[in-house]
Length: 324
Image 1 (spheres, one colour):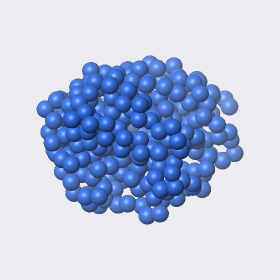
Image 2 (cartoon, rainbow, N blue to C red):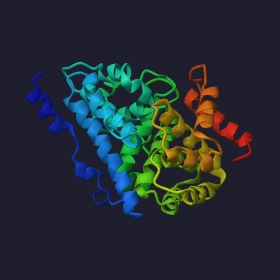
Image 3 (cartoon, rainbow, N blue to C red):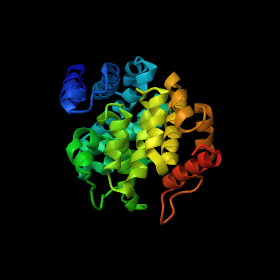
Image 4 (cartoon, rainbow, N blue to C red):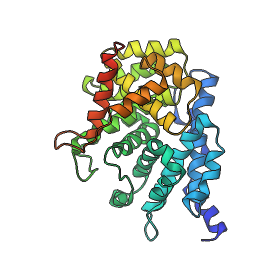
């Protein structure tokens, strides 16, 4: 493929930068610093997406991704994974780009990469979903987390304000498919951090308008975003944890997941430790150790995915430590 064609493909496939602006999305504006943070996240995502769209080979995108500041580099890898997944789903070509990406430097960003595949799921026809790569049976639910984030981010009125849930979601084809709505809700909860502009009161108010049975997953997703994306101080984190009430353990679990994602990729920031200290009562390294120690060794049961067993075990361990 010629360089000219790859550049053309990049321009056609890459979403407009304006789509990441809070004013365009209609999201809450807490203060200029929060706006700059969230819009930089969006810009970094699109940097990764564009690099993937233009790359001849997945490894060709890596220098661009590695040049992104560490605080935002994970989002660039997430965008690249979306780009490669979209290309995999296009008819008439190869469909191994995500797998090749994850065999390179993308391996350190596997959590964000699977979320990026979920963004692609939201953009490609359902009859092409079989081309999307998510081979890890434990982490594949992160694809639906990414799908949920996308839907809440781009279809906010329906998925956030009207609290829409998709019935009989058709993925994954095997395993306990009933869990799909819960994994999607975890992504919607993450997106709340952006919809609410990192304002913890606004975010908690949005979540508390949902039916009670959905709030645990929503708070868990928001706790992950609070730790990974940041944009708040310790007082705001404490306020959010207080608002979570009976779902404090789910917030702690999401925070621990975020710490693991950052440490696995070598992208820990000062905010990572601030957030895990408040939300999980641990250091990032301790949170990572808990996630690793509780990681299931078996596959999904007929009734429950191993991923949910893992999440619940992490939350229970944090409760045992007396914090939640």
